[in-house]
Amino acid sequence: MQQVFGVIGKSGSGKTTLIEAMLPWFAQRKLQTAVIKHSHHQLSFEPPHKDSARFRAAGAREVIVASPYQYAVFHSLHEQPEPSLFELVGRLSPVDLVLVEGYRQADVPRIEVHRPSRGIDPVYKENQGVIAIVTDDEVIDCPLPQLDLNSPDSVAEFIAVHLQLKL
Image (cartoon, rainbow, N blue to C red; front, side):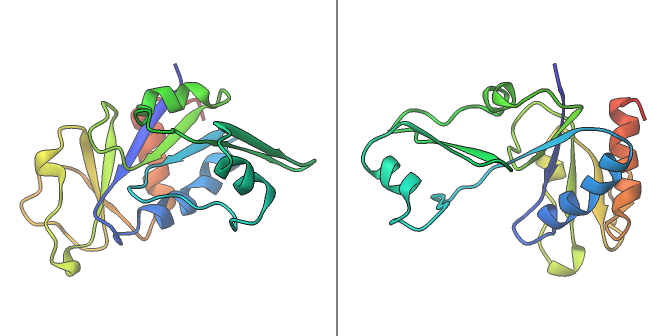
């Protein structure tokens, strides 16, 4: 089973920016990493008049767009239930680490990105899987380790050590 680690936090807290900033640290250590991001919104991948969008609109359940440089799989649920995080992980090519943005209730270890200056309560108190807080300021009365949001390399190292990844 691939190692899966979550990054959660309220909207606008910096989850995507943190993940993006950590990816080079993993790559420099030859760790292959994949990212799964959960969204609560309807996804739009290209303008409606483009070929793959037209195929999906016409009823195709899955469309693959491929080039010599990359490919993308578009899978329409057509009123089927949303797949679980682990079903999506199972669709990935094997990697050393899957970083997950969102999926707060999935049974994976996770960090919470929290900015006290925003005046929004952190979610770690209601989420058993949070093992550390990543913050730009001290979170008062928090029993969890607090990592510096402005040091993504140290956050990446924390994840690697926690998961016992071979560096």
